[in-house]
Image 1: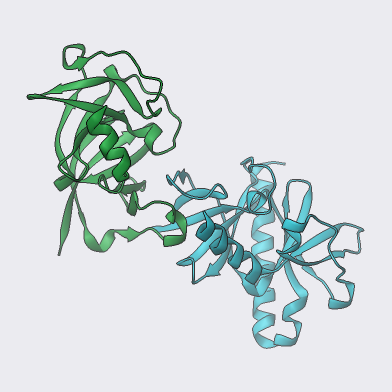
Image 2: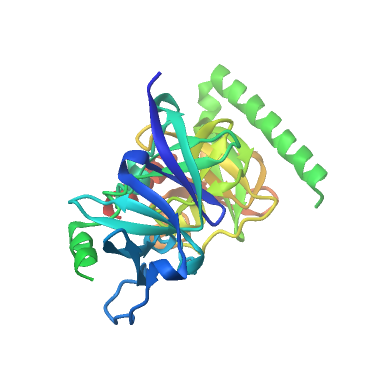
Length: 156
Length: 178
């Protein structure tokens, strides 16, 4: 049976999953990893002012809950950070409340989200029900950002 | 109202609904006169029983990013992911306040991918409405497109009759236009 490996994260009480192939690493945020900088007036709300020192790079940190329109403010220094590949060779750190780990789910158990439910965006491409009976929404990290936003992230 | 009373009320509505659907199968001539009545805010609405696939309690909702504002979310209903819609917001009304009396009215929508749940504040009953008693609805323009009329019941209460096909079209059109 075909399976897909996903990284499961929590935002508030809700579970989301990303394809493992779109995730490079998961790390805990800590002061020594964060590089503080002055917030700019033009920054979108979902982009957190600090950047993450990661290997030899400084990655932008995206508050995933705000990016998904959940309007939950996050304390970035208390979050876990998912280093995601968002397409075009760009990476960013997605701030989540909790990274729960890697799991496998059978392709048969994934329900594509009806097109009418997310016609505006393909960020959520499907869902599955986990062993606790919760619905886990599957996120496409590449579809989460427009090409403009991606360019913006690399320049900010 | 206690939960047990509410549960038995829902049970009796369900039993009556099944009875009516059985009679509809036996005699299609009566189909247009049978409606499931429910409350949304202060108003009473009704859907033809032939359009209703069932009623159920509301399960914990999962928020769907990017969904239209009338989509409350999706829920796990017996292992199936069920989209839930706020009829109030679809009709241009205020956001739905979810109470313990809230129930899902399930309708089929093949274009929308199967069954969808319409959130009602409270289920009332199944009523017979004769076609002669149906008048033009006195509602807003936005609502009028979804209604095929209104009818006054014997007890004097007004009930707004929902046109299921229009409702389905509204769901799909709203999402197309974003």
